Amino acid sequence: MIRYLPIVAFVILLALLGFGLTNDPRDIPSPLVGKPVPEFSLPALYQPETKVSPDDMKGKVWMLNVFASWCVSCRAEHATVSQFVKESGLEVIGLNYKDEPADAKAWLAEHGNPYKVIAVDYDGRVGIDWGVYGVPESYLIDKKGNIRHKFTGPITPQIVDETLRPMLKQLRAEAS
Image (cartoon, rainbow, N blue to C red; front, side):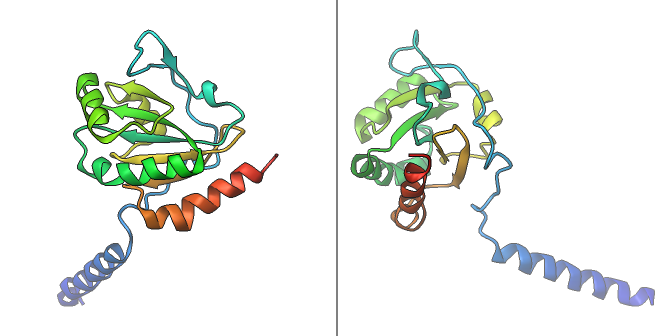
């Protein structure tokens, strides 16, 4: 019986590996979906004396987009997010994550600024409260201030068409 133990262990390991390879690594469920947004009060990137808070968005459907100038994937999603914001009128708070403010400003000057306002999360503590695993990540928030969806990784045109646009339409129609 003991001589079959390595074979059984190998088969179990193969099954676990096969299961892991069939899952999307960007599909990380968030325990915050359906719950109120975590509170924060952070300095604004362009006006550090002004504080940015989710309270500024009460009664609106909005998105928090976590980005950084050092993030390659943020560059990949930036044009898509910018175009969607322009088309939809969705208000987006940028959360500049673990980044130097000067670097973020230079990056935005080069790539454009789709954000209503940008909060500076220099040490990443607010990102931890929101459950950020890495950048970019985005959270769609309803009018009541509840997180309705988390997007892990770059937002693509396919995500905009298949998920973001229909969800935005639904959230805007709720409680109107």
